[in-house]
Image (cartoon, rainbow, N blue to C red; front, top):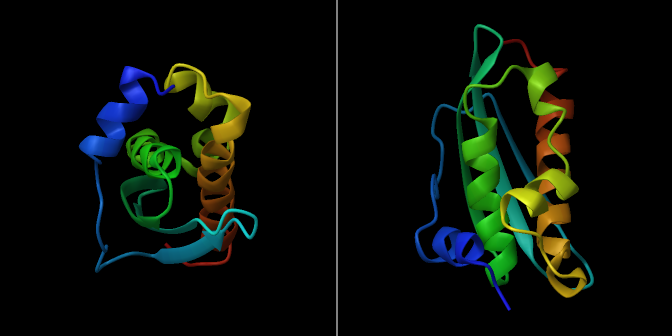
Length: 122
């Protein structure tokens, strides 16, 4: 059911944990399934230098959060706006409809971080 990429990110999540020196931290949830994703980012010189996450959720939500932090790192805020649930799903080999909510949760978290960064001095 899960691609090797999903299983790899789930079994070996990248950038999991707190980010002490974050410019912004957000928490989003999916009220239908109960998954919760906390995403933190540190921005310097207009680029997302670091992103970390904590997730309580299904295999796909954890995998998408892990991938999201890798995709955010090094991008400008404008570049980060191009990340979508669809692009995250594609990067993980395409998620079935039943598990696509994990990609949507990650995209929602990225959107919330980017919105907050618009109001935070960097």
